[in-house]
Image (cartoon, rainbow over all chains, first blue to last red; front, side, top):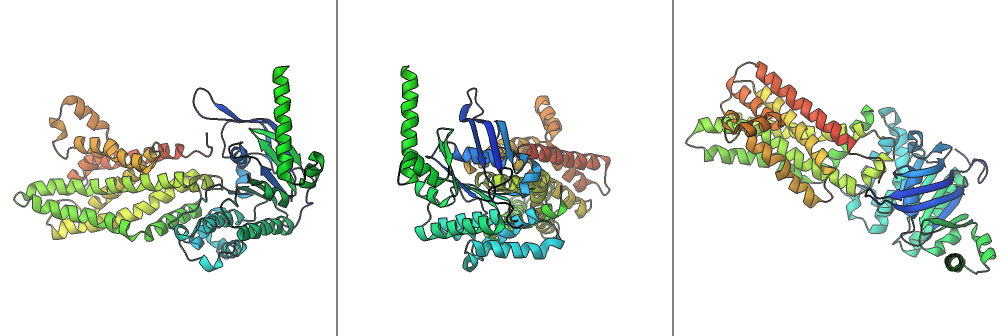
Length: 265
Length: 245
């Protein structure tokens, strides 16, 4: 389970000509239009862009819970949605998806039993649950009902579920929304520790641009398209900006003027 | 299907229920109270209490389990836990069987109490074996679970889910032979009642009420109710989609 050539070898996620349409009506909306990107293994890749730009849809497509996906989308060497991938990917949805009428530990016990079923695995499961609770710093609240926790604590329970079973790829949809600065820093430290010690690939979405600085690689997204894929340093250098946020805005402006020129032509 | 995952799911559903003692109390006590009420409503005509009481022993578990399951699975759909579970290596059959097992266990407790009270405290006069009453009650509970699971796919909120109760259950209640013998209904209605599963649930109860042995009709009723439950459970499984549109 140790670091498998971080950032080398085949990409954890490989997309070419990826298009996603949503809606069941007569006119399905194209939410993601013909995009291509690679998420390198063993690194933290940030998927950044404004709300409603298609981040969650893209993450669902990678996890395999999104319908109407066309083009090439390979995850850990398999087509997205392959049954073999279900135990190899940890996924945290935007809203914390845990049972409010179970305690933190009962929630984790159940999901652990789904990932690693059987009486023979009971000891291994108990260890995994303990470790996940410690990872998200909820040991003191392990016996509390999830419904009685604060918003930040509930999203950490949701994250702990995704950490069970040591997934090779962690897909996190805005895991730090609504958290206080201290907690946000702690979570980012945890993400880095997971990537470094377990060799896991982390794909994390956010609409808060200052979080971009904490990622190894960035995918900047806008209106269903990938605006740029680069490291934070390279992006700042290329756009001659001091922060990723300014760089992103400059790329948006450039794209807009380019589109306007094409229209007037 | 995986037995360990099914058992884990059933245990989880029961654990959720345990944190909600008021719901358990309502599920278990309401049928008992209603039967007691009915006994004294028909104080002057114990024969009527026999026939209606026996039918209700089958109808209570169906209605309770329908309501409980439709709300529970709707919550599972809206809270995102269903999406999470289906992104994990959990079979749809495991999830559905887990729910059926957990609510089946609650139905056993509910039916034991209601049947026991009706037979020994309220003087319900049944010719056949009480175990057969219990069997029909259990199958009815399973049918209720199946129907609840199925309709929850068409409800976007708890408001809608509760409204499905009168829409799905009431017509069956009116046509099942509880209020008027099915043979005396308008022929069209009689034809409709022939294809509604609750008619057979109530008929099965009546068979136990009036016959000492298992009759051929009783076996037919039980098989039809069980088959309907399995069919609707399978339809319910088809409504659990791994992919969001």
